[in-house]
Amino acid sequence: MQQQNRTIQNPKPANEPKVKGPQMNDRDRLNDILSTEKYLTDSFNTAAREASHDRLHQTVMTVLTETHQASRDAYNMMFKKGWYKLEAETPQRIQQAQQQFQNYSTQFPYGSGHQTLQ
Image 1 (cartoon, helix red, strand yellow):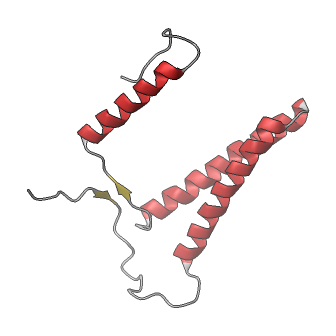
Image 2 (image 1 turned 30 degrees about the horizontal axis):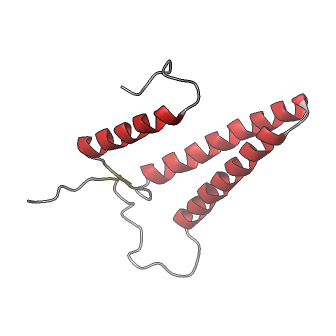
C-alpha cells in the first residue's frame, strides 16, 4: 500500500540556498521571532492568571492578546514562505483523538450537561 504525501507546505523561495552558512538569514530571524513570541505568550499567560490587581490584569491581557497576534503573524509568514510545514491527519486519526477527549470528559466534575465535539 502506497503512503500518500500528507505534508501541507508552500513552496520554499527559489533563491534559498541548499546549504546554509553560519550567518543568520531571514528564515532564522523569523524562526527566532516565533520562538520568542511563543515563550512570551506562555509567560504572559502565567502573569495574567496571577495578577492580583484588576488594572494590571487588564494590561497584561491586552499585551497577551497582542503577543498571540504577533506569534500568529510570524507563523503565517513562515508558512507563506514555505518555512513551516504541517502534517495532514487522516479521518481515522481525527476520530481517534475525538473519542479520546470525549472519554476524558467523563472525568470532569460538572456532570453530563456539557457539550461534546461533533
